[in-house]
Image (tube, rainbow, N blue to C red; front, side, top):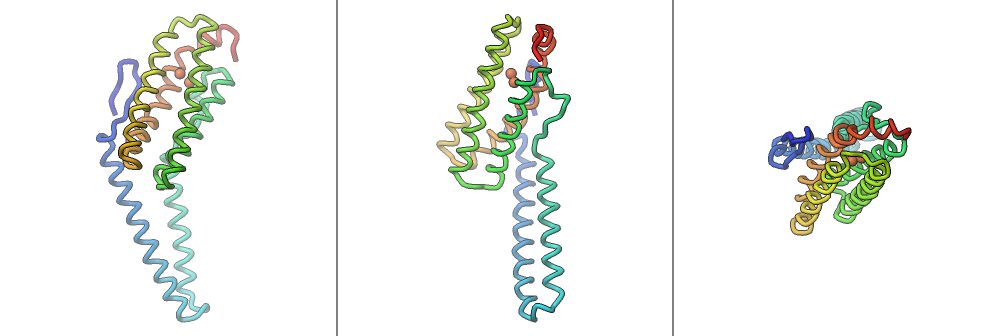
Length: 208
Ligand SMILES: [Fe+2]
Ligand SMILES: [Fe+2]
């Protein structure tokens, strides 16, 4: 994680390599354990449906999958009231951006296939552009003095993601690690940092 001049944080792939390697390793281990348990369950049923062992193993399997999913779920972003910028329309957009980012992260982390990965990333970026335009128009309408700097933040994010998209065209799925890490770090720090800067000004103009 690197602190940028406006207090935002940027995430770079190599800095999160350990984390991603650990995650990949635990996913592989889980797949191995599930595979072995399925084999054991199948063999257990060879001794008849009254044999309790396969039923117990099936229960353990379900518990393992539930626990793993809950642990994975903690990595997803969640909306918090403290992220509010005091303007419902923009808060709703930010909530939607978090939903779309989580959808993209799920598509990437679970290797759901190129079409779905590409679709969720496009949906997220389209909505991001739509939201940036709306936010900038609102700041423009009320002569917000920090508009130029804020717009610069939006444009630099779009440029970075554009580079990642080119990388994706060249390298496919593996390139998404960079965009996932970047967006994961960027989104909340922007909503809860840069966007918060216009809050007193715009709410002071009567927006809510
Ligand atoms: Fe925003
Ligand atoms: Fe913004």
